[in-house]
Each structure stands twice: as C-alpha cells, then as structure tokens.
Image 1 (tube, rainbow, N blue to C red):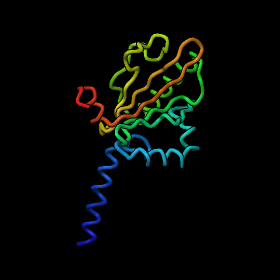
Image 2 (image 1 turned 180 degrees about the vertical axis):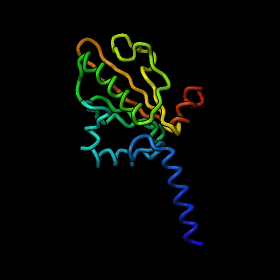
Image 3 (image 1 turned 90 degrees about the horizontal axis):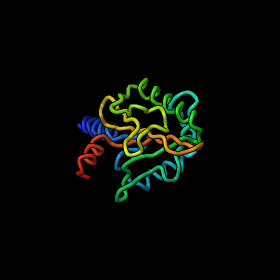
Length: 167
C-alpha cells in the first residue's frame, strides 16, 4: 500500500511540476530564493545558451522576475550586443530553433525579422509548447548599431489571466 501511495504521489508531483516548468529547473511560482540559488549554482551553463546555430543567450541577475516572492517569468537575452544584421540573423535562427523543437508560432508581426520595422508596442513573435504550458516571447531591442534579442518565458495560464486583466 505504501508503495502505491508513493508511486501516486510521485506521479502527481511530477505532473504538477512538469506542467509548470518555464525553463530547465525553473518553474512557475518557484520561491524566488530557490530560483536565485539555482541561477547562482549553474551560472556557467546559464550564461551560454544556444537557441539555434551561432546564437548565444545568457541569464543575467535581472533575468528572474518575481511577484510576492515567487518566480513568474524568466527573461534572457543575447550574450553580446548585436548589430542590425546579427539581430535579424538571431531572430531567424531562434525562430527556426523553437519551431524545430515543436513550439508553435502563435503570433508574429509582419516584419518580425527586421528589428527596425518591429512595432515596439507589440510582441515580435510568440510561441507556445504543444502542451500549452509555456509561452515564449521573442523581441529585438535597441537602436542604431546596438541591438539585443530578448526571450521571455511565461506560464501559459498565468499569461492568459494577465492578458485578460485578471492578474
């Protein structure tokens, strides 16, 4: 009986946590101190992330966004400053990467791959995973000769509540 109890408990915990994962070991509503500890303990691997050949993204100190002590979103951005052509290349390669990993593009601006033409008051591109547990948003930011590409991970349900003004 105990074995069945622990098996069911383990399955429940796994399904709860896996449905809430934002990125790697970071999950939605994780205590922010635990998230910061994980970031600190894994800083080397989290400062060189590839989302497509030739891309390099990094977590920063401000990557973890919390509300009332719980992780609500993750922001990462290109590891180095990019020029206009590099930023456009990052956008194309990163979109291809997410789509090849079974993320569905649910929104993209008409000129999504050209940072100069991307409307600043709208997201550039949004993706969701097959289970609809994570929303990923990608945006170029910058001007002139200096750009960065930002990627934000949200919990799907939280994102919908926020979009409806319920959060």
